[in-house]
Length: 62
Image (cartoon, rainbow, N blue to C red; front, side, top):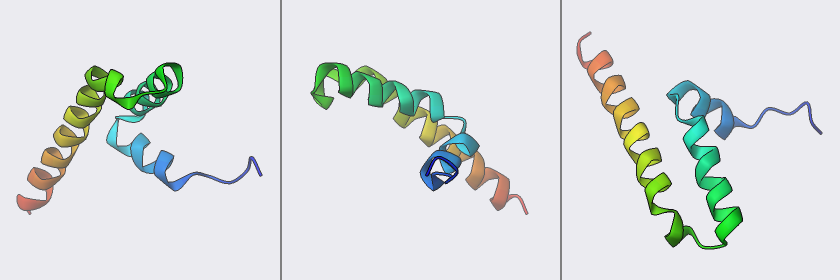
């Protein structure tokens, strides 16, 4: 069913890291080895860390 919304994709859209997630997936598909994709994995991790820190700051100020 193409009408179903992927909850993981929805969450990643909110973080602003969806594009980097796709890059990780593409790299793994192309290389067949996640270990060869450490640069894009690192970028994705940094994006998620930044989002998490912003959320913590946002909610700790209340």
